[in-house]
Image (tube, rainbow, N blue to C red):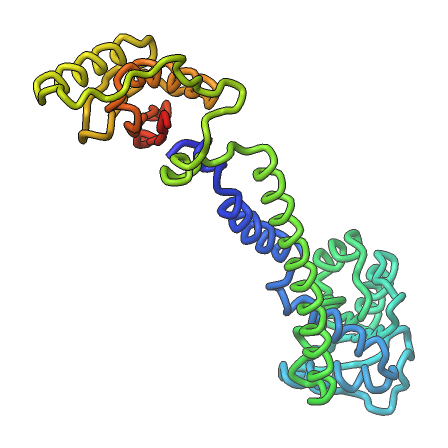
Length: 326
């Protein structure tokens, strides 16, 4: 089936447009990436915590790694860092930043590295709700300072978050997912309606069925004229004479320019084949010429014409147009 014939079915293209537009929009909006939405909602909860709650949460994460707090008498922020943890004989300095605007800068990483050397520590950790600057993250990797920041921080602390807070983060992610699904569905419907309207207006119109075409009158621009004088049927003609008239009429029809074949499929049906496709106006002219030959004999006045019109495509069958002189 060619593209031209497919354009006659705008509903099919509208359905394809609906599916493609929905999944494309959903992918662009990240509908199927709910973990990221949950992490954003979780980070917002962390940023809203008091510093003491946030630091206790970070401490639980570090304890799960086998680290233990050291020097409980020291105050947070003393000597330039917040928490001091031990793993065996190794000491680690910890910075806790739960402010949404406290971005990790290269200067802060450099200062923590200096403190690590001054305190004779084996490493340092930065836990921050805000993201880190690219230069700061690169410097931290070079100085062997671990950074848990922004969305990555949620992955570390999620198991230690209170149940109700975890439920709130998941609910916020689901609400965002539903909103994006609604946007994707609306966009898909708009695309489907636009595709249907465009193809319905610009695409080819399907040919009417054979029974509808048979009831369609010949174009009014060139009506088939009635003969000026029609002989009454001669009841004295023999079957041989009637057959001779029918054969002579077929020969006349075959001589028309657009006709490739003509034969009687029944006593009242003349089957006509055409060389190529034809417009409705040219078909009306052809029918007029055929009827002129038929109306020479009164017994052929009510003959049905079965006109087979090529579609121009080898994959499509002939289109049958039914006409009648009277």
